[in-house]
Image (cartoon, rainbow, N blue to C red; front, side, top):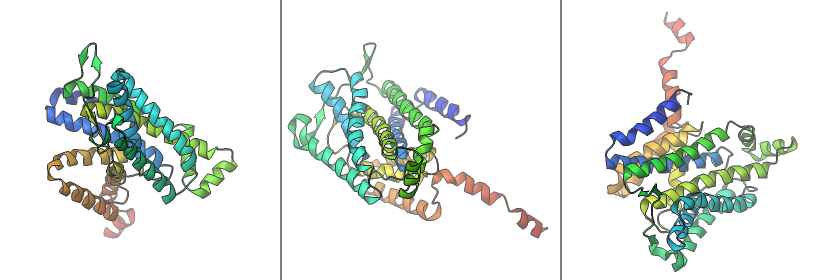
Length: 317
């Protein structure tokens, strides 16, 4: 995305709450949740790893915030960074072990972790058990609770801009460039031969990704004003993967585009239940078969079709 488009995009999201209805703001808030999650997942995907358990780290951030505010009376503002910190600590411990694996073994290990997290919160009444914990307070700004969609939108936007901004900047650093050399076992061995500490770099990127989803998970719980194990399940993780694939993995904006469009569409299909899954599956199949580069690759393909090759022009003459 060019330097001009980013300010235009920021201007659009800043002006949106002044023009939108409460329902449209609700959709925008849910979109901001998912685009942040998808951008964080991309930080792992670009290393060649498929995470099927990112929902577990979202749940850790959400439950950390809820436990602190509801059970311990800590300010909801402190619950947001605390959610990111706890998710990051678990990511550091788990990543140091699992990022030595490759392919399906890593994916299954992260999937198992996500299932363990939800099973743990479901098993203990102090964490709300299967029913979860209601009455989660929202933060207050100078004594005024962020109770309306309009007020809460700004909090979600701030956390989204912070998370996405850090993740975007990360890929253009020397560290981010080094991560691209770790996509396969062969290139990883080559990178290590020139002094790149592969496991340490991969673990650091995994931690940054999970801190971002943990912080947004905390905000997500505050928006819903409750949390239970069914909010962040394996299906949440697979939805994020679908968003990324449909949007395209060629660059940073692909997963964000996929998450934004599919989330907005999903909100319109929310009442039809099963059909939402069917629509997602159909879109995924179409993109894989006809547009393997994802939606982000569509403008390039259209430009290519509009411009005939020089040889074809000469032959036509």
